[in-house]
Amino acid sequence: MRTVMNERRERPQSGRPSLYSQVTAKIVSELEAGRVPWVQPWGRAKAALGLPQNAASARRYSGINVLILWGAVVERGFSAQSWLTFRQALSLGGHVRKGEAGTMVVFADRFVPKDRRDNAKGDERRDASVPFLKRFTVFNIEQCDGLPENLYASAPPAPEKLILPEAEALIRATAAKFRVGGSEAFYSPGCDTVHVPPPQAFFEPINWHRTAFHELGHWTGHASRLNRDQAGSFRSKSYAREELVAEMAGAFVCAALNILPTVRHADYLGEWLSLLREDSRAIFRAASAASKAADFILAFRGDAPRDDSDTPQTDESTDHEISPLAAEQER
View 1 (cartoon, helix red, strand yellow):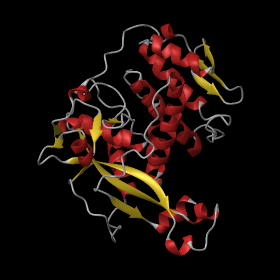
View 2 (spheres, helix red, strand yellow; view 1 turned 135 degrees about the vertical axis):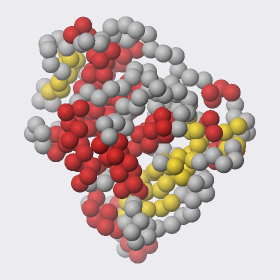
View 3 (cartoon, one colour; view 1 turned 135 degrees about the horizontal axis):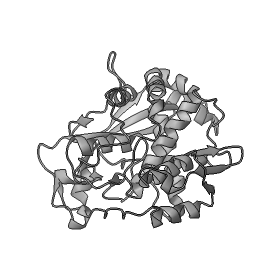
């Protein structure tokens, strides 16, 4: 996930893997090695737990960029979760140190080619648009000098209690039909209810929170909320896709609450690998849906919105990936 500081803007060349393929291949290799990208070994990491954010705007990164930046923090030993573009570091009075290698993040967008733009009007333009990815280079604040000291503050560790007050308050604020009791954790789309055993039923009470937010991740997919497909039968591809979304959504919410994420449904690893191998865009779609689910939940505590663009578009390091074939597949 490392890039040189000054990339050229270019179109994909024959034989050159797309950004979708590059990112997916990285995540597949991690899963094959038994490492789950949304569950990093934070116990060995220098950085405090949390969602990555842009240090200039204080907005959170989202979707696939959360996985990319978490991986970079752990792999490269950074102790901060804050990132900047080259120009943003300058705007804050600092600079990226000479020789530092940036980390690639991506931004998905669509554009209408000129020949289609002239003939399309209104909603037709959306149908005529072509999806593409831009790549941006960002730098961890530890790769910079001269930045304001307040950018280096870290979050305090979570207190040890059966149910953390902040987590309990967030669950109450959602007004979800949340049932604590029984011996099974699940979300019932028909009744629109979340069921989670009591904290003392878990070997480690902190796992109650991880399970609760996984099931609340499913809750966000109801037709009255984010309206995801939740009709898949057990072990079907659509069922596995929804489990992947809820798995990452729960991890993102936990990280925002300073609760160490873990894998809640490792038994789906084979299905997830199959999805990613078949479709290089699957992890992008799942991560995007997971971020929307996490944002939906965290909005009940008044969180600042995520940065929809993921990175400011003033950075000079971009690389457009435009593929008509990919456009056809997305439709």
